[in-house]
Length: 149
Image 1: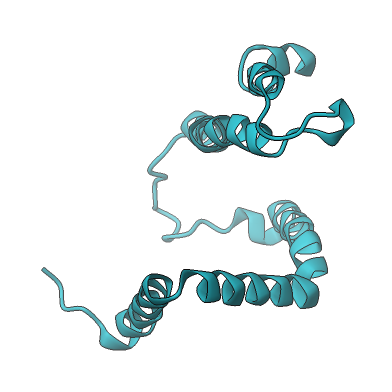
Image 2: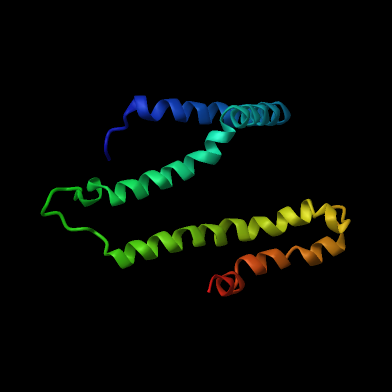
């Protein structure tokens, strides 16, 4: 086992330990503190979070078509670990898998606990329970793929 670097490991570990302990000691105060911190970060950096992915994508496209796009990382004799087809498959399947694993299970619970006010439903209602599987079936079956073609 490699040696743990204390300056890299200890600060996040201590923050995690403090957060877990604070949550056990006073859950309501911890929740309020974390909510306030999240709201503060979003108030200050909200627009950055919205624009940064677009700027990163633009940077990648510009670098790809610039002379830097021809630079081979690892030297001129380096061979890629994955073929272009495998890279394409990896970048296509990973977000899809994340969506299926996490959001497809979270979306019905979110819709059940906070149903759409447009439909006049109050949580939890039997009708809300009947309606919560519609959007996940639309989002995570063949339907989205049919609309892409």
